[in-house]
Length: 270
Image (cartoon, rainbow, N blue to C red):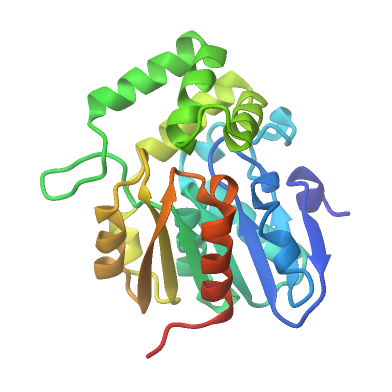
């Protein structure tokens, strides 16, 4: 196993001519795809990895400078594709990985046949002509809560992010992966993600994009999907699902997995 593969816990499953790359969001790891993977392995080769900073990665490898922008994560993705000789793939990115995939697709559009984004946002902060869902004051409170008592913050944030029943397995699962992160790394990643602004970049994305979103998501308002649809540089399609929460592939698999499979298997009708 190469250095990149080992650092990111890369796993390759299944067989098939077409390759699917699954990339998780903040506070999770590749286990977030557990409901989806069994439906893919018979028809596709599936590549999964953990973003640096996830609780499953070695914290000594987390370079605070490199990961102070989302480009650092995009370079990691391209390095994984290089190491595993993935010449072309369908990329499925959850949350921040939707934008990481977009950056990588601008750098190397030849490596991606399409991007499937779940709960992705180009900017979380509100602006004069843009609604991202958060004011700067909200973010400062979030950062302070992470800084002051990480465990308490995890316990409060997980139910809000996942939505639905407080005792659900999905909330327990997200709480576990969130709490596995080292607090200083979680704070750094939260800063990088929530203060990011990818609005200038998305116009340069020419790869077809499938934008999937829960009807109710505390991190990403539904209007953001329309913003992406209107401003992406290539073809795009939006589907708002009846699911609740920011991790619908984990919390509402019965709703989300069939939708995901449809968008993976079928291209945008021209």
